[in-house]
Length: 210
Image (cartoon, rainbow, N blue to C red; front, top):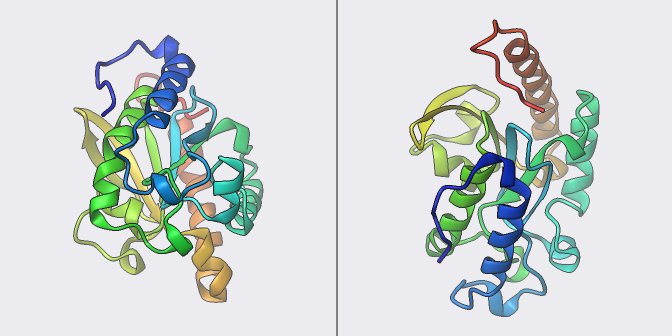
């Protein structure tokens, strides 16, 4: 289990590296035995917003990095469409080893990885979380359907702090459906508007997103 002791923000990169090492040594993680690599997370640890997906697929398992397959390429294009550099954000998943045959993670598996995801979020200390898919959405928004809430802003309390959560479809779903693809494009346009609006808020309320 991860060390949940709160760390100072200027050590974010070091703390993430230490957590990754700790996670790689945890033999209790339920998806470990069938996986090639730990897929921890990637991006700018100083970013104030995080994209959280569901679980690694084949290419993520091979490369040890989230969103590098076809769904990742689509995510890159969506980010580019709103002039957002992938290197400016942080990306991770609710489970960090590939489920066999890319099946959905079980509730028990999600729970096993949850302390590590919680620690990643605590270290980065984001102001904005974008969930990709229903499994990451359910971590923050219980009892809702993604078809009803995608693209909307939700103000939540996390560890006593105000955070905005924006649920979105998983890019893999958009690759299977032209309708979902259009919805995702619109949701990203709304995301861009949200970021711009937050940046233009008065000092003291402004969220430094990148």
